[in-house]
Amino acid sequence: MEEHPEFTAMAKRLGDRVKRFRARRGMSRKDLSQHASISERYLAQLESGQANVSYNILWLLAQAMDLPICELIEPDAEGHHPDLALARKFMESLTPDQQSEAYVILRQSFKRGLKLSRRVALVGLRGAGKTTLGEKLAERYGVPFVRVTSVIEQIAGMDMTEILLSMGQKGYRKLEFSALETTLASHASMVLEAGGSLVSESATYDLLLQSSFTVWLQASPEEHMRRVMSQGDLRPIEGQGQAAMEDLKSILDARRHLYGRADAVLSTSGKTWEESLEELSRLAAPHLGL
Image (cartoon, rainbow, N blue to C red; front, side, top):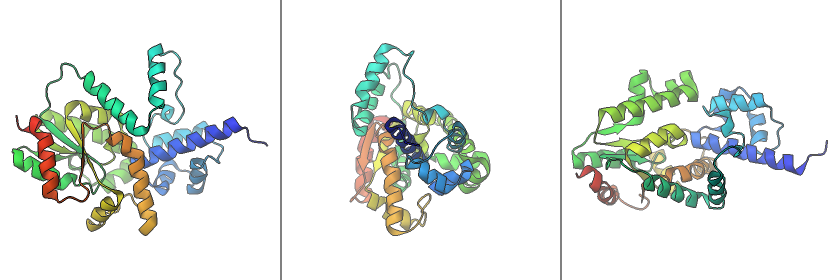
């Protein structure tokens, strides 16, 4: 049967969305295929826009990544305020980085009535320096340093690997939101380290953005890889050499505009931790230095 160009384009957009959401979640293709109970070969075809997809498949994929199925299907703008359609059209004309910048401007402009946060949250991929800088920053200002992943493990009574194996993405995301809520309720002032993939969960990330001054600790892919390898942890990066680097770049690219929603950006590439700490301290002073 001859393929219709419009159908081909739609299948390609769907494949791109699945691949993008998978990368945001930090899931390898093998992980997603196992959690969704579909073959890795079929998933590869789907992501390249070459597979015929049923609603059942979309449902399985959405469940495996703990996403509303509508996130995988292009949304219908009908029924919304007409200005929303215009705003969306304008936003779509921007680059991903510009979209992130516009979101930050809107969020800050309409953050009326909120008190100046005394919490500083660090977001970014593993290897950016969140733990090292977070601990040092908290020590400097005499406030607690809290890792969201540690709180999740305490609530669940098991480590991250066990949580993901036994509960999957959906169970983990629920624990993550609960852990963040608990932490915010317990600490009026602190330095918080968010898990690298927290930004891919809209409700959880929005809670973090509304409650804390957020800083994206940014580094080059090469710096990330070097630091992660020195820690002996390549989750969820599979393979070696070039393949591992491509996976890391894919995750960074998929999350870049999400990390870009943070209130500030600090690059740690080519800097000592002391130099990065001084820059971070200047950003945090209006919040932790009250």
